[in-house]
Image (cartoon, rainbow, N blue to C red; front, side, top):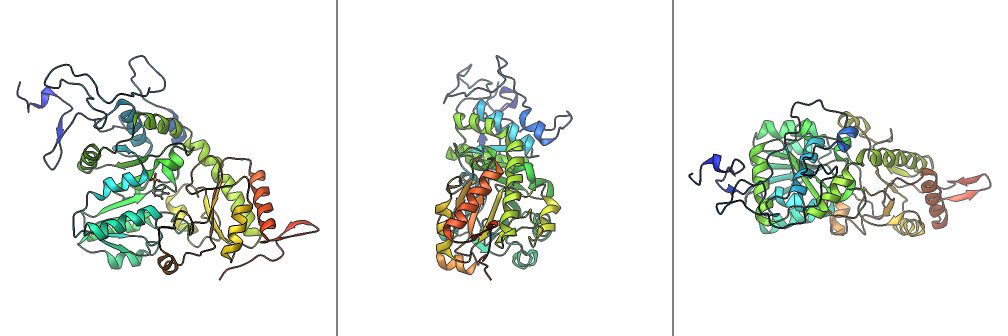
Length: 433
Ligand SMILES: *Cc1c(COP(=O)(O)O)cnc(C)c1O
């Protein structure tokens, strides 16, 4: 049998660049004819074909897999960098819940963006936001400095600002919604349509970490690639780092897979198992986190603080957010008017852990300008109108009354509000702008 005879190894494929793809997980077929259930059901319903019928796909903690012949044989797996049954099981499950034909799991959210950015060539132009996740900003700056990628930062919450920058040279539009910590909303469907009109080969990439597949499916509204940090809502417990990439185009998926296999950033079997376990409770966690966040946003707003949360009618882009997303998420921010005061509030909170990140079952509080966004220099932060006093709350699944009580106490202790005889009351809420 000829070595290049496809029937010799039905799983062996060649990607667009002519690279031999090693035995790897075949593309997922999430819609293989059966009825689709609501997401909460799909999240827990898994299709495994374990040899012993294990109801939870085991951790295949093995770097290599035995081959049946010297020519490689017909096994689906040979080496874990290329493919591993635990990772494949996770990837197929993720493809299903992300409404994608193919999903790929890598070692972190930034690893996911790194893999995607390798689709770019020197001279390519990227249009992206001006209120990006700090790590995204750092990687793009590296690419602009060292790889001759031209990066345009515009206010992506303004469709016209993006439109003005779009040209034949635009190869990628990278979007994040809501932005963080300013919680600005991006009109993904309109931007995707415009980008494809101007250059049909332009890739519209969405970082969906803030909303998760529970609340938003960018691929359904025109995005070509969606990625997420699995470290956040997907896993939900801040005990692993992971990244997920999903797309519908098989050729793009093959290129992404080629990079993952070449660089070795595929998610480890153990972390794949943990991410799979976390994903199953996404719906119940997100529902609770979201309703807690809503109550806390209303509490802060009613006491005179400027609160940024798409669940509040006062959000300037409330309608735009709800036109595509199914929920407001569980990250909000508010301003106190004074960075030192904000610091006192953050440090006075007890239930709210001072920590970067979000998406975890427990509630977190932070000052983005000093923590998650510190890699953006102070001058750029000023240009982007990021208030130095902004406090970000990432709401968990605790009892909402306990969370509000702890926050009230921290606000009083820090001197942000005063207590009157009628009980807790914001006598002099501090306002900005
Ligand atoms: C955390 C985060 C990332 C990076 O993910 P890691 O898993 O930390 O590498 C990217 N984008 C957003 C919006 C994030 O919050």
